Length: 567
Image (cartoon, helix red, strand yellow):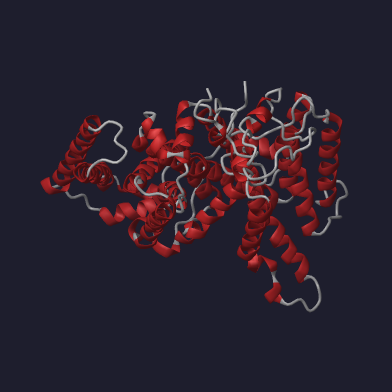
């Protein structure tokens, strides 16, 4: 059985066993990291730029453990010791490594979510950071004193009028009617790839009614909840004063689940109006919708505190984990980072598992079919609207969860934390690592985050120690230029990404001559045989273009070479 095409190619049985080499590499880079950070020789440290590269080399052992052919126990040992022991111990002496590891996991989850939308479903979304902002502000408002400010602005309690709840209820019913109407249209016109003008207008109107209905339902729920909450706190001034630092931090766990639902709903609302758009048009519209969320955060000062942002934002207290951190000699100011580090490891593990399961499910195959050819996918019975909406909602839910964690980690959020360039950064991670490939996307997120938060900053600190250094040449000021150059070089020399999927590699090298890889190439599939290699070259049957990929079952002779009487 072949491995999923969305998973990376790993070393097959023909590759040499590298268990010893893997262990030696991990031990060597780990010792160098301890040595460079002063953990082995107290008082001696290497320059910041050297430590940054050593840390990246140590993280490379996790990639090699995944890619190389080695004993399972060695891979688990390298991954477990590296993630659970080495990085926390290094972070104890230097909190920046804790912060860097947490940021890598946060952006890896964001990139995996965007990979579903862009890499699998083929929907170019440039407003993805909007879902990240939704999760961050969801917890930021309730987990800080901003919630008390909002409540005080609504006091004293005023009974709801009929218009306050009647209008949203009426619009919600219209949205439900629009949903039923859309289902009726789809049943009356099954499989129509190009319906008539009347059908298109009816579908557009029904979608508009659905969007209005969903928004009205959210407004109705918010209105009723606001009325109930203000009624309670009007008669309980002591309870209102207790909200000076936000609600009980233990609700953090509930808001992680709520962020999944709220971000998914926002993803549906953003996805519905753009279902008929493709390519550049889809990118422009999603960019605009993403900016709308940021503008809302900037202007709704009653709820978001406007450009000044929200602070401080609390995180969930975990007393037993704080006791463990204290027993391990972590300073009290690192207790929150200690908790968030292990939390993001658990979350990223769940996100990876969900991605793998989706990639191997019928939904994942439907996304890929839509990406390759919408008309063919619809002809095969794939519901385009439902499948695209599921892609938007799934990708948005990952971003919403990480938004909550990001707000708790930063302790403050502002609208400038969710600009268009954040969406571009996440898209860069997907393209750089390998679009459509889970491990490649994680690698891209780690590389971009390391460049942005560690290597360029460390290089700036090192250069500033030089005499007569011109501050205008500070490389940290040119991070976007550096990312641009890296992307251009990648598109020229490795357009499929650092760690592409098998399908992406074939698409990017259709015109290359065949048999250009050595038999010992470590990119063989992990399935235990050369089935994927045969699949990759099964269609090279056209003598004029040997790299052209045909579908399985294609005739072994080109159509223009077959005579009329040839059977």
